[in-house]
Image (tube, rainbow, N blue to C red; front, top):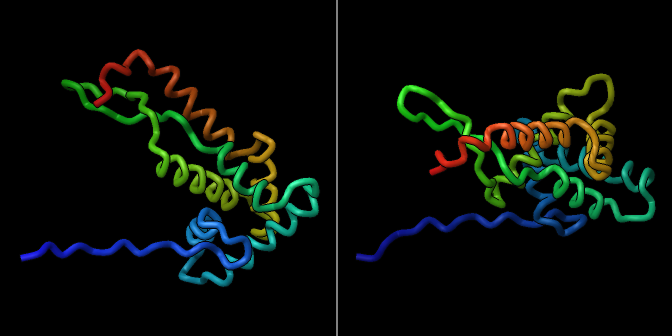
Length: 156
């Protein structure tokens, strides 16, 4: 009897820039299944970025911002004996991307008082310039891993 395998549904690239990463970002930005609203916010944010940074295309700025936020190393809890240690470990590629997207969206949602498209545009420009809340989060994670490198031998 043959094995039944579930086919993994492939993510389609976004309709405007033909980018898989943009499509993933829009899906993470989406709230209550309102994809068109999420797309509208994302594309309006990229239009704002186009006005702010005219020498590069907004999708390049977006990709560079995500790359700048990706963490290389993180700490994970490991229980040894009766104690828990924060063990630094390298981050896999797909998790790097997920964390970068999550941190940018958390930074956007924590800001108050502006439309989401403006908050998203500002956070992406900040990440592109290697500053802002998401970059601070990345630096804190790297700093924590550096501080706990004495426990690296516990890595599994």
